[in-house]
Image (cartoon, helix red, strand yellow):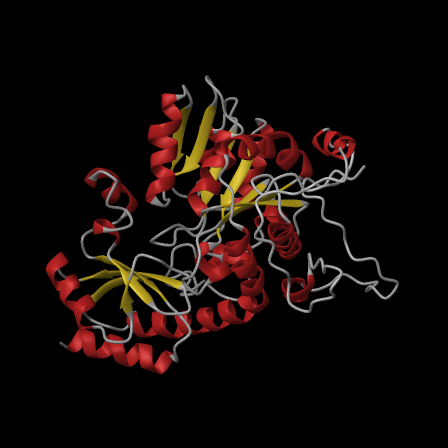
Length: 408
């Protein structure tokens, strides 16, 4: 009996490659399961349920004695193609897709912890992740500790007692702080903790946390994976034991399911993800170098710049550049920053990131508004900070737009 939770049957062919395919090839080919019609583009299965040839087949299917799709909340052929493809790109044994990035983040921890457990996390993280760890989990009797920076001694002290899970976000949102994935993973495994890495800001193109020692990788597929502002989705990738024994029972019964249509959009998006991200990273490097020279700007946080405090570690952990997002702190007030934003005519004001269109947001009043002022300050999120997600426009137009907004 196959242990795949989705009933995916790989194509049988004597002409398959006898070498390890590149992740970019997996982006186009992995998980492809053609129907009997032999379609070139992936099929879209919008159905909610499935039929059985007999009562006995239904019995065997629910007893997991045979491979058969049961219900699209559990698994679906289109969703399976997305999961298989992303797992191949990531180099993971298995993947489970969810309806949003935050549903993936919550499920990654909720499937592990119970009353009396302890969680350690990096202090710099997306606001909703912070709320889950510091407000929701404690209601279940789960304790937590947040760790700033990359000092091995500080991390070792935080991990000197039994810990169920470690959650790290690197680079962080919005100021791109870098956490040493291998160092933290080595320390966490000594106390039996499962290491979960939010890899949203790096994307599967730039960073492979599993290769650095992490156990689980989390994505908001809404960002670079879709990358075109169309659908919400999340994904969790890791070992078969984690997925089958911990995650699947949780998501099957709590229902954070991805829709088949959104999965189909994401399957097609993966085909161009490498090209999009590489172009966005190239643009971001040029834009970051320009911004760093502007007198109106106090600091630029971009891992591809040598001025970034985590530059060397970022270049060691991340391949092909520093990502598509830039943190900017202005010499000025919130009113000055808003005036600058309002003068932009190419770059849009939006709280999304990883999109083909360049987007700028004011984290203190939007994405991280939920956090108390003292928590924002601890993260370095002042009223003068902006987050710029660099898209696919020509870099010269982006620089001209920033120049004219700064001048006015």
